[in-house]
Image (cartoon, rainbow, N blue to C red; front, side):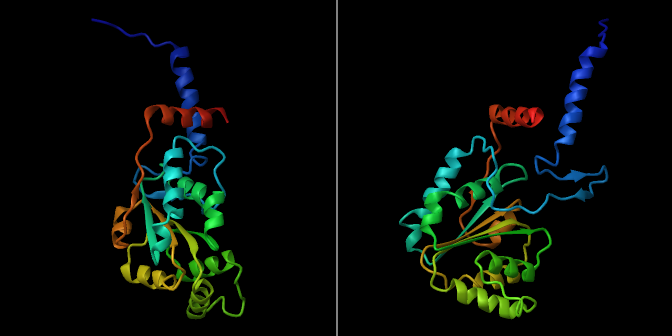
Length: 229
């Protein structure tokens, strides 16, 4: 029979790292769950601000930038581009990096970013997009129809880039109502949609970008950066 003797020092270091990791959950943008499986809290709304450190996604970023600014894309009426993957794989980071790239900024006449989140609110989304393009008006800000008409007029004929981040809504009628606002945009206009749900991407009937998991080396790199910060 073999007996294993565990010293206090042997388990003290892993316990310390576990406590640090637990404290970093919010920094990683992860959701916390109770033992019953019910969600306790969700991540805060995203913005278009680029993350300070982008790991291992340079190839994907360059491919997305090329795709947004290519001659082929510039000939299409409206492109919807879903980015799909589980939480924490870098969907939002990928969209942020492309959104803020100089080549992309120079290519599109208008840009707007809105975090849709789990609770779909058409008024909040429309109002947020109007504010992004500098067309907010307090006189119509409580009337969904007037806001959508104004947004459609503002985008008409202009080549724009819209990012709908963290989309969960699977209701097809609500998606088509939103998409119709963008139908009269200029040739080459694009909507990027980030989502954790493959069903959302399928609803949009568009070719999607699927985010793969990070390699072991890249995963450890992220782990140690957050541990040391």
